[in-house]
Amino acid sequence: MKTVLLAKDEVLAAYDEVRGLYPHIPPLAVWRSWELAGYRRFDLPGPVLDVGCGDGRYFRLAWPHALDVVGVDIDPETAARARETAVYREVHVAPAHQLPFGARAFASAFANCALEHMDELPTVLRSVRESLRPGGHFLCSVVTEKFVDWAPLPLLLRRLGDGPRADELRRQHAAYHHLVNPLPAGGWIDRLREAGFDVEQHVPIVPGIAGRLIVLFDQLWHVPDPGGGELGSEMHRYFHSLPNFPEGLRDIVSGLLTMEKEPETGCGAIFLARRPA
Image (cartoon, rainbow, N blue to C red; front, side, top):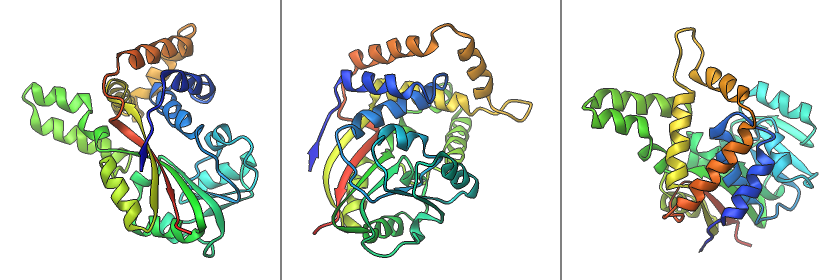
């Protein structure tokens, strides 16, 4: 297996594309930039299966020339929005461990930051493998254990002596995302191999400095407010009011990349795996 590190210019070029989708949502804009920079190294031959497809906007950004694509999502409302985008030939409502396709139906499969939220992970991976033709590739991005370990707010509370509140905040954040599989990179490799894949490449994403900042933003974004909403709504309004916020955030991302000293360890990862021929 080969580990590939992303260059600063690759991440910034990806940010220039992604910021159009999330111009005032820093956690998404930065995270998706690292993912897109990684995806730009790979191809997805059709027909493609998009597991946990969401509304399809990010898929179209990442794969503008992919025409023969089938999406599957567990949420009916999300699937309905995906159909409206016309990104997919078909969109199915189904859990990923019960994919409604025959064996060997797809040339490639894709899962963008979805597997860490799935309860039936071993069955999901086997189901994806069975849906692929022999030699077909599975490209996925995932969250690693560093997404939990590096969370700044629980660390601060624990340092201030409030261990119970730190633990509760950590649980709340994981529950919000239904984060059931924040595995180390090696753990993800093991799960893919146990499902019958050969793991060919590993791309660490969102490493130490940026990772800590993005997790902090994400935790703050989802802090409940007294009115029943989230702090993120207020943050979004404020960021939207700032002149040239996306450009300024790009400068911050550039600075974080310049300071990074451990790019081989990320709070996310991309894997390219293959069903053996």
